[in-house]
Image (cartoon, rainbow, N blue to C red; front, side, top):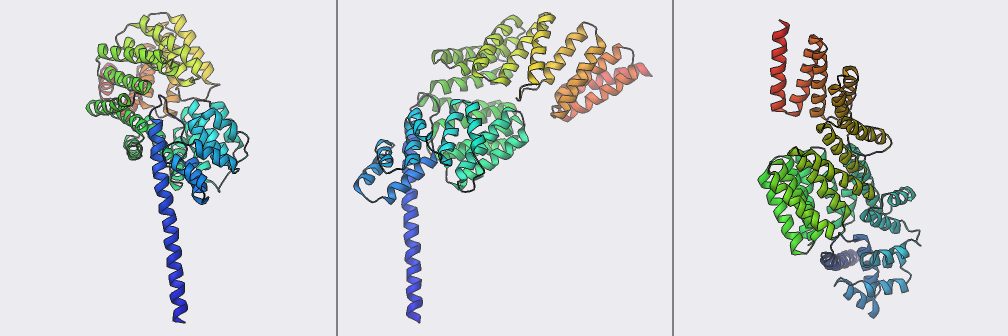
Length: 491
């Protein structure tokens, strides 16, 4: 009996060793292949298509097929060359693995193969390609055709990633963060390290825009660490750029400049000129906040020339947007409006709705400052009417509030007050307390001007409550002084 137990123990040990060896062998090849493909991707100007799922699937098949052709294809694959593997896989009827591999080398060629497949994994790869190319409508159609799929966690992860981006574009930050978190978990389960880092980067952006700074820092640092570990320098530079924007938001300008400097160094080292231009733009925004207007303008113009030379319309629009802000900060309203109008036309081409509304708002603000009220009103109504039909993260409360200022200047107090109340309601709903404080201050001024000083005092207290909640020290002090003066008047 003891010999039977010894045999079973030995057999179990051998099975364990064999399975462990197979896993170690696969992990070794997967690591080498991932590094080789990512290294090759760094030579491309724009972010290239990458699929951990494609590499895993191809490796599993090639390691299972013990013949000379498979071994030759495997040797080429771990050097970052997929052509032999594609031919071998197509010959053996493995169309999904072949198509997904080809998509990393030749996106249109891989797409032609995968479009013929009903495999859910193929649909996930097509979805990722459409997202990379900015084809949002086509990506949405793919998502609608994807059923709930428990068999392939990677497919579910791609779907969650798309949904997180859609929620972010719509300004639904709560759902965006939940879906990005789900994508992170699912990508991690499938050892899709690069995609996991992308999901961390997206989550970090969501939390940064939601002003949840500590969580944003954790997410962006995780993204940077994973990108650095896999040799994905383009991703590392992007994560550093986002960290720089986070530090800018915190007004920790030294740390922000350090992150931008590291990111720019990586971009230039790998000749990624348009990526470098985006970092230069972000540095220009940093200098704008520091009120170094001449330097901010110089940097934005430098980035603009790079984007124009590479025919990068989105980047050109971003540069012109920044220039519009720089001119506005210097009260050069005519120049600000010109740049915002040029940015608007480019954003229309790129179908970036939120940025398009932002450019319209900048034009309206410039027109208001130039006392071109009719033009300003026309731009603002264009925003308010179109925003009702578009689902994006631009806050229409800003446009409504500025329209209120136009009617206030016209001394149409009832219409102005109605608009400020509407804007304040939207600001409260979106937890934008600074905006709500400004709107209630304007309402208080109208009530004071109308002779209702007691109600004006109550409204100023409401404005102070919102200003204090946001941490507006200077604004709070101004309101406290206004309240003190009004209380003295009412004695």
